[in-house]
Image 1 (cartoon, rainbow, N blue to C red):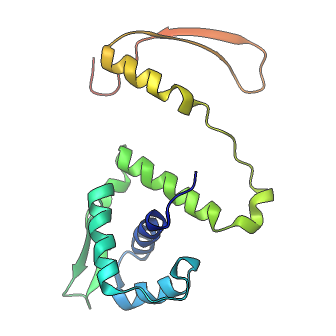
Image 2 (image 1 turned 90 degrees about the vertical axis):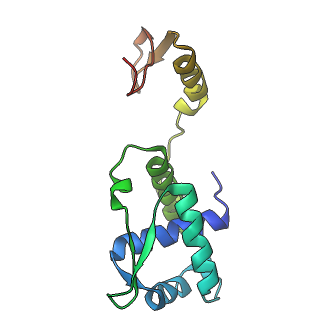
Amino acid sequence: MKVPTLFKEYIWLVETIKQAKKITFAEIREKWFNTDLSEGKELARSTFNRHKDAIADIFGIIIECDTKDDYRYYIDNNSVFRENSVQNWMLSTLSVNNVISESLSLQDRILLQPIPCNDYLQIVINAMKKKVRVEVTYRKYNSEVVSHVNFRPIGQNET
């Protein structure tokens, strides 16, 4: 999965603030300059503000500035990282992608397996919408035994 540079920048910014807990814009700018993402250019305040707004819109992560603590930025709603949400899953997935893509020199030492559920996700989602049953035939990893299961995917909020 190739992630556009803009999303990499968003993820980098979130991870940087999350790890620091609180961080000044000067510190963010210094860390930014030391990444490949910067391409040797400083992070402009206007770019930072646009990224901050986009992160709020896309991931629901609110980055605030504590004016009483040396104008340090922090994540105002850290609970989003503990929630079982699509935004949290997406952020985690993109973060892992960033880490791996920044380590291309190690790609022959990192083994990734394809995720077969991607092919079937739309089928299960449609079954949930239509409230119909799904029949699945599967085989556990490294096993010759084939199993069958018939179920109705209901999700968390449905009984």
